Image 1 (cartoon, one colour):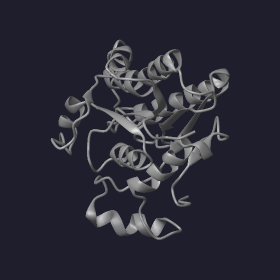
Image 2 (spheres, rainbow, N blue to C red):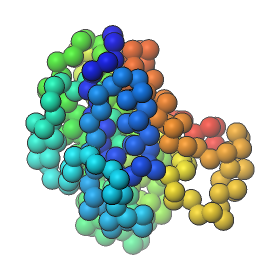
Image 3 (cartoon, rainbow, N blue to C red):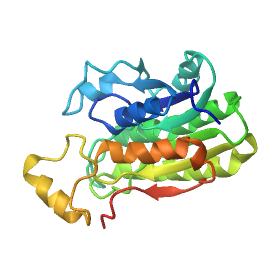
Length: 234
């Protein structure tokens, strides 16, 4: 199964420092034609702001019509779908608003389901070559809507792994753990590194390498797994 000219759609590539951008770059190295999405309005309301050096398809995943419109814009057939997008605003049980809770589930769970559904409906690749990989997380304390919606995403991935096998599509989730994308305060970086058995902080490239393996021909027998790629951090 040669990868050259095969198309991968990677969502949530809004920052060069992010995991999504690392995944897109790694897949390109393997010969994939990569299409990316971003939602600049989300980045602008986050502390890091919008990255004007990133140029993907603007995709508002709170809109349930977006997944179909997105696939309509892509030339050729998509063979790999990588879900790296997210809504992530810290809040806990007592201070989460209904609007924030609903937005997290709309983006992290509902949009992921609709993207997977659209991908499966349109898949025309070789049997056994289709790939779905989603980025997940087990963070939930003081991060309730994000963690709960990622838990829902995990169940959606497991459903996809079981229901899309007849199309030759695998589905897996990757939890990259704490990753150095610019959010770790300088004063805490050493503590993060010491907390990991390997003595360093995870990089976007670490996660991207695993995603590239899962998307490639040698990852075809891995299906329905919630994989942790965090260097062994407890």
